[in-house]
Image (cartoon, rainbow, N blue to C red; front, side):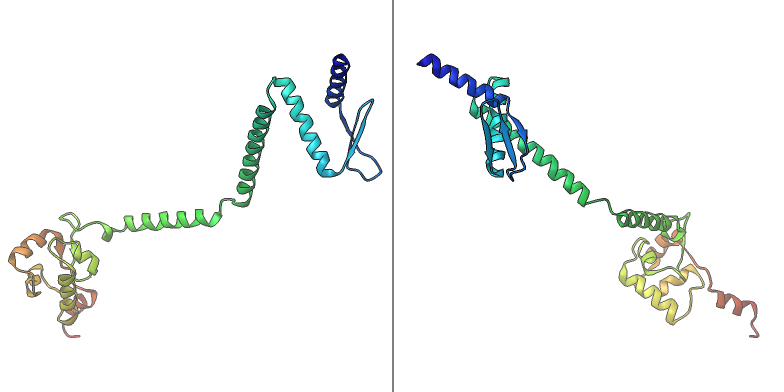
Length: 203
């Protein structure tokens, strides 16, 4: 009796290992046929049976238990799923050309500002013209803050352009000590209209 049961189990296992998928015209999705048995099933059962067959083959090839085989299949499925998701995300988010254009434009504007003479900090080698310097340029001078820079601008606009560096002491808040600190870093260039008036007094 036991010998016959073992032969039956061995025959069934051999049949499973040699299952071959076929397609019938009767409407069933897949059939697993052996020399002794033909198995037909609906799609869900077919996929489940197919997975179980591969699980059994994996157990036989690797000599592992059913739980170990399920763990291997689960890890492999998760790995393939991760690769699929990553591939889809890469396809859906291509690099935008506008980002490259914005970055290039920013770099060009930064280089242009750096190449301008006025962008350099005032010094003895690069004195600024107090008659045309902007508020930011004036505030770059030592001891000149927002308030003093506005007073310098107001003086040259309401009174007259500075004719000499010493006239900076006429601005409230600039004394002799501050003037001596500023002297190497500033210069006085007369505006174009003032230069024309000096050249042609009759006009």
